[in-house]
Image 1 (cartoon, helix red, strand yellow):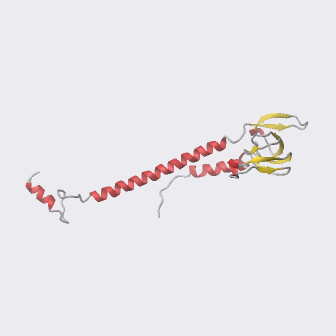
Image 2: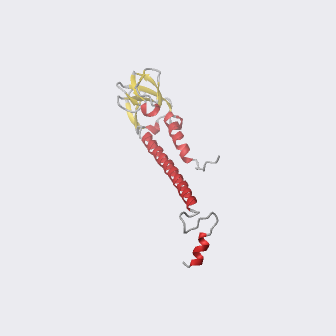
Image 3: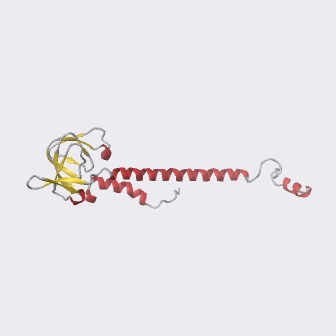
Length: 176
């Protein structure tokens, strides 16, 4: 670089030129780089939470049983897909099995583990005329339940809808 150019650069306003210490634009560069880093970190945290919610949703879907023991009028049972159940059907639920739909206990007494659905840490005692939630795990005794809600009406379907709803909304930047 020739002597004249060096003098012109060093004579910039503020008494500091490119050749003496710090660049004028360096402060703005670090502020911009920090801002971009913070925005990327926020996006990463958001995506991680969305993926976590998706994983939680998948584990919720696995809670529902595929089949139920439908009780016929003659008290015999046959296995049917849960999707075929309708309001008023009676279903036999054995110990350790998942309750196939929201229902009312019509015979038997047991405890039901609803932890994955309600967060209740202890099994809840259920007897005749008690409501049970589809997806909950039956405890120590066989019970017969009468289906009250199926499909999108169930507590389980409403929880899944609430988890999916925020994921489907378009993301927009926050403005103050």
